[in-house]
Amino acid sequence: MKAHELSAGVSASEPLSLFVLKSLLHPMVPVVTLALCVLAWGEPQYGPYLLIGVLAFIGAADVLDVLPLDAPPSRSFVLSSLLDILMRWLLLVSFIWALLVLAGIDERFDMRVLLTWAVITPLALWCGQLAAPRLFVRARRARGRRRAVIVGATELGLTLADKLSQSPLLDIEVLGFFDNRLAARLPEGARDRVLGRFADLSEYVARHSVELV
Image (cartoon, rainbow, N blue to C red; front, side, top):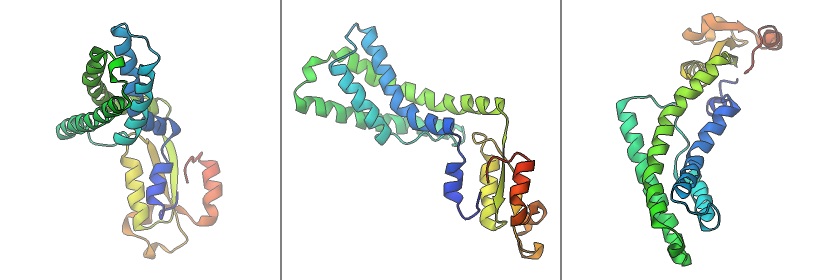
């Protein structure tokens, strides 16, 4: 992992399962809750309700932010996330309803289904946002930590190492740095963490089962 690629490095270091979870949780929840509401009120699960499901999936992926799994689980975060979800969900539902009215098909829907869906979905989104990080951390820890080394013992490299080490979701152990410079030219916090020169990198990675460089 190169120290000058901080933003891309953190993003690229995310496992595929974390990326999928962050990308699909918000879009999938409205679809699932709509299906449950339709089933609960005895409405057919095809036709016009399928259109709402498609609009909700596309709209949720765009209107609702990508799941902030790295946010601290503080009381202020819990409350602010609920308010944020409520505001964004209200915007999305209003947009979908406006489309239905403009298309002249709003009378084809059972208002009980839509109102129930509009009420329970933001609560489901909120609960999912709070529960997802804990579930993912447990799954990651069961598979063991991944090892990483950073090419370039710079201040930016130290920042990257701290970000990777402090994220329980990524669950990455930063073993150290590789750099060709003398110790006197390196940042103080990196001098005792240099594992070797650039030429030693490939051998070290193979010997210590390093997954991320």
